[in-house]
Each structure stands twice: as structure tokens, then as C-alpha cells.
Image (tube, rainbow, N blue to C red; front, side, top):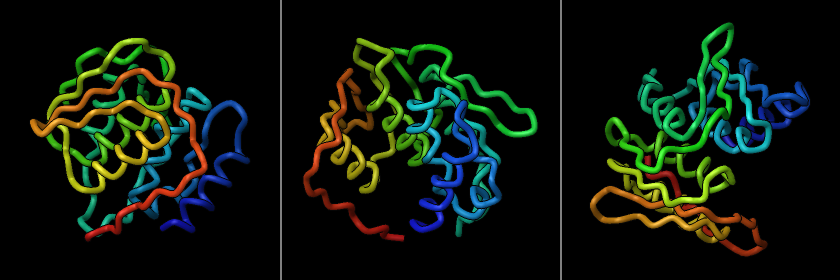
Length: 175
């Protein structure tokens, strides 16, 4: 998966200068391709996406993922490909539809790097699986300001993220 994501990212970067192009069939091979969307929205403001796949659990809807990004100020249109575009600011209070690891990971990654808000964002009904907590630790290590609470809420404060050269341990996938 790591090798496929790296190939996909390189290919996507070479395809367009105006948006991040995730329309390659490679994106449909792995579920994690969807997690490229938030970061590249920060750089380009627009991502075109063919769809993800490759999940051992089977095909799963992306409604919660889309809903989380819409609440973060992203407009989503469906034409030949699904297009995500930054068009507004995140809401101050975001209620997720239900617990979704992928939606939380995408939302906090986007918000950690976004610089279009100057207020705290409260997110409710947050999945707190170990890999979500590990992502929060990683982002905070890069100077994000995210607080996870035991009541399945979190607060994202505006910050200027700086990827610093230091060591960080990414936990193993327990699946």
C-alpha cells in the first residue's frame, strides 16, 4: 500500500498544475487513497477523485467522509469525477454523523494544515481508535494544536504546522 500511495502521489502531481489529480485507476486499488485528499486540498484547493477501493471489509459508503469535509468548508461536486474544492471556512462546531475513523483522520489532517480560520473548532462524535490517537500525536508533534477528550470530542486550535525533523513512531495496523 505504501508503494502504491507513493506511485499514485507522484503520478497525480505530474498530471496537473491546477488541481491534485486522483483520477488514476491506481486510486481505486487501495482504500487509503482517499486520505490524500485533505492534504492536497491545502496545497491546490481542488482535488479530482475517481474513488477508492481495495478494502478487505468491502465497499463502504463515503457519506461521512464527504459530510465532514463539507462542514470544513469544502464543496463537493459529482461530474465525471468527484471534485473537492475549498470554498469556505470550517464551521466552529462540527457534529459528525457517527463514529468514522476515515472521516476523523481526513478532517483533522485538513484542519491541522488549514490556515483559513482563527478560532477553535469543536468536533463531536469522534472515533478514538489507536491509529486516530496516533495521528493526533503525529500532528501535534508537527506543532498542530489538537486536544482529544475522553468524551469523543476534540478541539482543533489554529496553528502554524511545521514539519520538523524528529523521530516519531507510527503504530502498526492492528488489522
